[in-house]
Amino acid sequence: MLELDKIVLKFKADDHELTALKEISLHFETGKIYVITGPNGSGKSSLARVIMGIHRPGSGRVIFDGEDITGLGITERSRKGIGYAFQHPARFKGLRVADILEIAMRNGEHNDCHYLSELGLCPEDYLERPLDASLSGGEIKRIEIATLLALNPRLRIFDEPEAGIDLWSFEQLIEVIGASHRPDTTTIIISHQEKILQMADQIILLEDGAVSLHGPREQVWPVIRDSVRCACRQDCSRGGMYYVNCPR
Ligand SMILES: Nc1ncnc2c1ncn2[C@@H]1O[C@H](COP(=O)(O)OP(=O)(O)OP(=O)(O)O)[C@@H](O)[C@H]1O
Ligand SMILES: [Mg+2]
Image 1 (tube, rainbow, N blue to C red):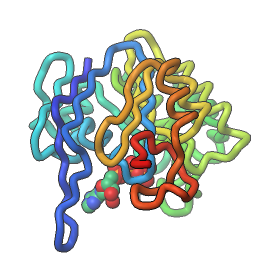
Image 2: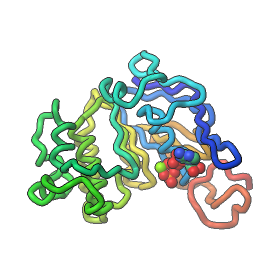
Image 3: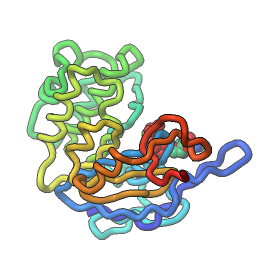
Image 4: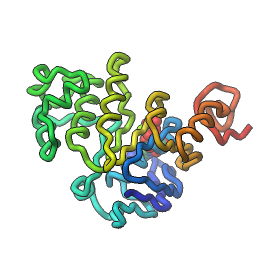
């Protein structure tokens, strides 16, 4: 249902150019759960933003249901059935929690209380609250996830849904995301959490803007788990995460 064809994304930093995505080609099938993992700065959120149309790639194509949507913006992609829950959700002055949920759930089967309750927020406490800086990090994150669940697009991208979520709510979060996945849905979750990696049909490992591993969970997870651990390419003696293509 989604194909990324040689996606290149560059950012201009002060006096240099940074290539965040280096010819990424991936194919996502309907009905599967994909977990994208990888070190901080490896390009996971950038990839999600390219799929959502927030960033336009310098080259490469985004194909959705056989249609080239590379030139389409966020609103058009949203209409086509792509939704993204941000890693760092924005606050909106003048909107209430109820407003954003009502916009999202126009075609949904539940009312606005349902999604908040599912994620452990008492609707009576939150529906009338403004969507502003008065909400804590974990609260705004849960409201963002509830909004994507309510929207229920065919392609859902959750960017580090676990970030800021307390230990007691984490299991529930996994359950809710897993239970809401349907055979006609494609779910992409960006995560560093082992329990979320265990939900995947397919795991994609991004390193330094490129796909270094991609395949069924049963094949990829043991490689990640047992991979050489080093913190940076210059000095592998420090502890760290993930790096499979360790130079030593
Ligand atoms: N708007 C931007 N302008 C310049 N550089 C950017 C911009 N957005 C991202 N980058 C850089 O691109 C690289 C990839 O960033 P990205 O946010 O995609 O990483 P990530 O894999 O999501 O990391 P994390 O695990 O920390 O969320 C990083 O080096 C980041 O600093
Ligand atoms: Mg990120």
